[in-house]
Amino acid sequence: VRRLAHPERIRISPSGINDPAALSEFVASADLGIAMYRPTYENEWVGRNIEHIGLASGKIASYLQHGVPVAANELGEITDWIHYYGAGTIFALDRPFVPHPPAPAAADACRKLFERHLDLDRFGPRFVEAVERAG
Image (cartoon, rainbow, N blue to C red):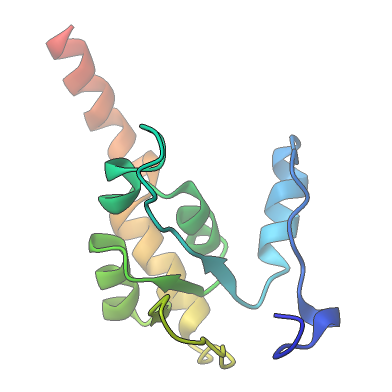
């Protein structure tokens, strides 16, 4: 990043942003969100759950919710949707990635992907009902 990018344009999130409004403001201020996942299988937290992350990345969901295009390595279903909607860029971890400015329509594509596939307001009630029926 320091060699290829403009360091003044790179912001690494501080750990522990506990205020939802501050986190929302921080995420929304980005031009591009980076999401890199690589399973290492060192323990149960970094193995198959990372390999098969599906739609479970809160980081990616937060970017999309705020209209921030995502640059991610190939992760399966979520990266298929990012590609389909034009909501970011998919790259391989085995070669250098140099981001390009997002397309003008990317913010709308991000929000559309979030609303159609990830928004808890849309899917939450059905999930709660299923849990209540099962329990």
